[in-house]
Image (cartoon, rainbow over all chains, first blue to last red):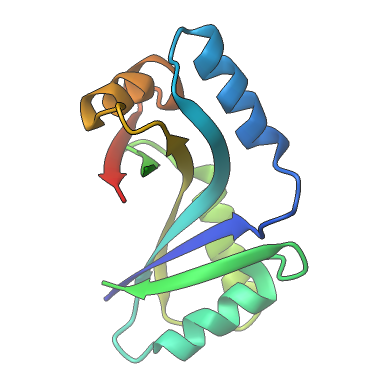
Length: 76
Length: 76
């Protein structure tokens, strides 16, 4: 079984990486890009007994900093 | 309009970051995690005239290193 975890900075938390991407796209001539937020995606190969709750526990303990990041777990 | 771009290392390309996450999960007592791959996700706020083809162009020019990474564009 697979799980995909997406971790993004919470709204209101400054995202310098996304801002750098936005600037770079503008410099390359791509107009029409208003805002950019960058996060990470983690794909896990899991044993069949691992549940979505287990993966959420992994997020809280390691994969996301829940003070400034929100996460989303998707079982595939 | 929004687009979500997911960039992952191609299969066969070594992913030390994912490997580090796998080790750390094991050290925390999470068993049953076979493999971990880590990538990035970029959320773009776009003007309405921007098409999926434009976003793919952005990926090829800036957001992904297509030698070692694959990308996936999703228009939201």
